[in-house]
Image (cartoon, rainbow, N blue to C red):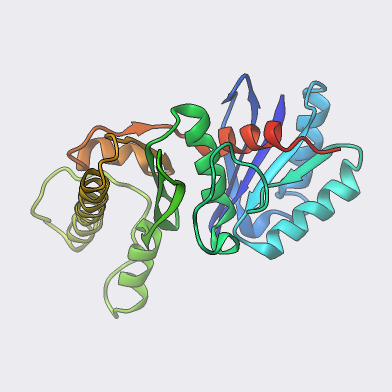
Length: 259
C-alpha cells in the first residue's frame, strides 16, 4: 500500500494505492495543505495510524512552495515514512523523447507512467484540471509531448474577472438545454459545450497527425475533476480513469524504489 499525492494548482488529490489502483480518492484545497487544522498534516497522521501497511508516500507537484510544505510535514509528523517525489530524471516505464524534460509538469509525468501501466503505448492522456493537458505516448518515440489549453476554472474565472456584470459560476457542468434562459445558463453552456468542442478539435488534430505517421490507433484516457464530461461532449471513445495520476505515482515508485 502506497500513499500517493498529486499537488495541483487549485486542489491536491490523494489516496492509498494498492494492487495498481486507488482504494479511495480525496482532495483538499492546495492553499490549505499546511493549515494546522484543515491541512494535510492531520490527514497524514490519521492515514498512517489507520493503515500501518502503508510503505511510503509518492507525490508530484506543480506548485513548488506547496511541495516544500508537504516535505516539511513529512519531516515533522512522519519522519520514518519513506517518500518519493516524481521528477523528470526518474524512470516512467516509457522513454522520454521530449527535448526539455525539466519543463514537463510532474503531474503529467505521473499521467504518462499511469497510462503506460494501464494500457501501454500508443496512448493519449487528457487531463482536466486548472488547465487542460494532452500527453501523447507513441510506440515509435515514447512520450513525445503534448498540448496545454485553458481549463474550466480558468474560463469561468476569466469571464467573471474580466467583465463587470457576469457572475462567478459554480462547479456544475449540467447543461439542461442548448439555448440559455439566464445569464448563468448561457455562461455554463458556453463553457461546457465550448470546452468539449475545444477538446474535440485538439483530439481530432492529434489523431490525424498520428495516423499520418502510421502510428496505430491510440487509446484515449481522461483524468481530472471533470473528465467524465468528455464521455458526453467528445465524439471519440474515451476511457475515464479518475485515479490515473495516483496510479502513475505508484508505478513510478516501483520503478524507482527509494532507499
